[in-house]
Image (cartoon, rainbow over all chains, first blue to last red; front, side):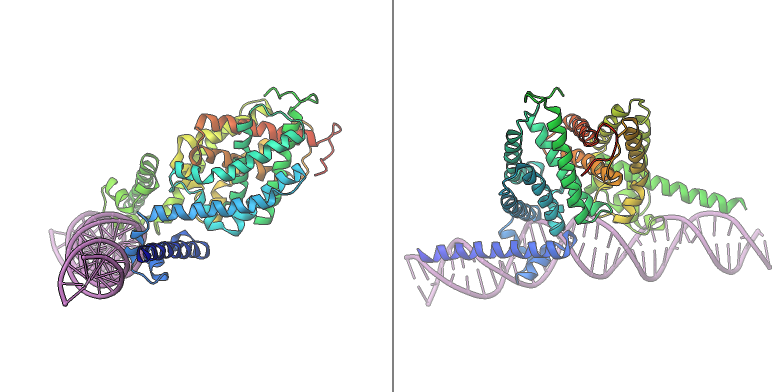
Length: 205
Length: 205
DNA sequence: ACCCGTTCCTAACGTCGTTAGATTTCCTAA
DNA sequence: TTAGGAAATCTAACGACGTTAGGAACGGGT
């Protein structure tokens, strides 16, 4: 049965082409330019063809979001190779903000409420897992026992997102935002370390 | 000339009605329902009338964003009356997240990249100023000399925004987000205090 | 050689933001 | 008191959007 497999391959191929074209438009021209008709034109098809591969526009956007998280994950894994646990944490912070600066429109869509909350949580999970691993190894290295590990992770995640957002919401440039993220992380880690008495028992608060 | 002033008053009146109607739609049904035609219907006019008061939809949305910041500012001023400087800081954090939880759609639009960055910075300035005052009095109360005051403010602002965003981006509910914000602030403040030696000279980093 | 399922396109629907032009309303001034 | 004109408002329309319906074209299996 060669024909059916070839057909399936072609189908998957054009699907990938659509994703690639959509990603290109998103990254270079922003979310406002991301239009079904525009994408169809770019892959040299008519608009309805897109609906053979995606239920609707949101489903296509979700695919881009998933792609973005995979990309971010790969960059994180790279930054996670730094041996020093403290530099590893600040390095991740810097990397996160750098990603937001290098892919502003993608980053924006990755955190846009239009994509379903459950779906976003699902695709973001691997990235958060990396963060958890890093925090685990950091606290182990410093004999810090966090009072609430999940809480610390959520604070970390929120802080990174907030400071990365500064770079396109506010007046701070990406370089400064990266520095801010590093400093914020240093301060948070210092605070957590200070909360823990020298004997390594959990902090009170 | 009574007639002209009355006309002006009527004009301003319908303008306010439009803003009020738009705000109501936004808060109760979200940004997707915020339509020129919908607003016009609600104030019992035809759609083009809206354009006599606002250049375009973005200008109207900007007005809502400004309103949101004024609202937030008034709530901040209330929370800023707490005498204890530490509780004042954590109280502001809690209040910020609470606002995001009570006005999710408004909060979302207040931080949406579709509104011009300069405009957003302009309307957000008074709120940030309150934050600066609070941080100033806090550091004074604890003899903490921050190495970079503006940096600390930006970290604060970013952290609050990030954690508030968790409540509708991620899996954490608003109550938990408020708690997270308080804890994050406590940790940050602890970190900054720890950076400062006992003699009150600025920290090294 | 026919047939049928897949693939694809044109045309259309309803909605959006926005504009043009006509129509109505209402003050002013002769 | 009425003619004129500015202001206010409406209807109709334009182009673009996401999306769907219906038919044409293609291509492998009988």
